[in-house]
Length: 79
Image 1 (spheres, rainbow, N blue to C red):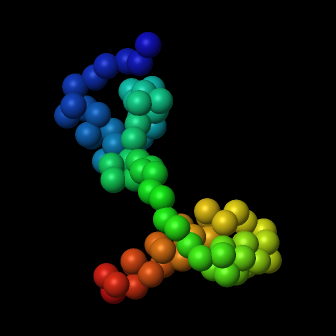
Image 2 (cartoon, helix red, strand yellow):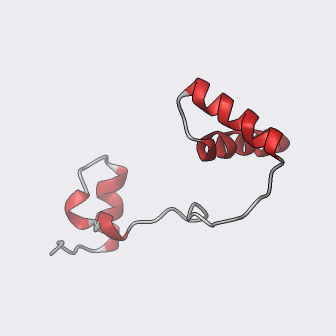
């Protein structure tokens, strides 16, 4: 069971760079807006083949390369 302390004490410890692990249940942590959500996308065969070839060259999965490329493109839209 994790220890409990006042929020003001927790904030002070955090701000001072102290170890706060004993007060946090990391198993319940989550990253807002980072939860995976499944989507289905249909690609033509030539595109799947090209994705697989590049994924193999880089040593990653097809899904990984698709996610990275989409993330890079979306990031470029905001800069």
